[in-house]
Length: 101
Image (cartoon, rainbow, N blue to C red; front, side, top):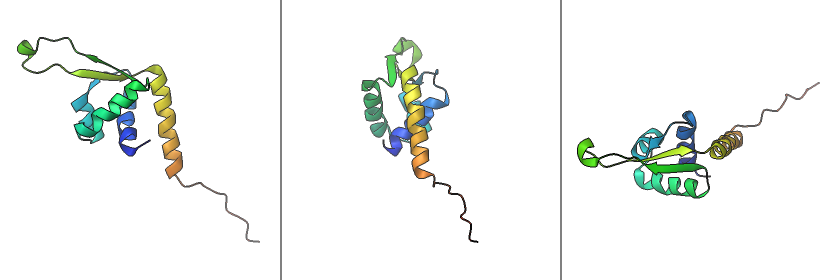
């Protein structure tokens, strides 16, 4: 799993029940949208996230509609495990001091 994917998952895990749109995720994960959207597509294909377009009148709102993303319950569990595994890999093992007697 790439560092960029981990960054996206970390943002989504900060509030797993909250819908977040792409630009919001890109900003929070400190990624360019060209990097973010392929990650979101892979996570959705894997079943880790769901997405849906918002239902707005673009003319009345004065902006284009947004696609919102959210972790699935299974995706949240898998994301938590993946982040924990990544942290364990980069954290040096703590070994008990050997007696030098």
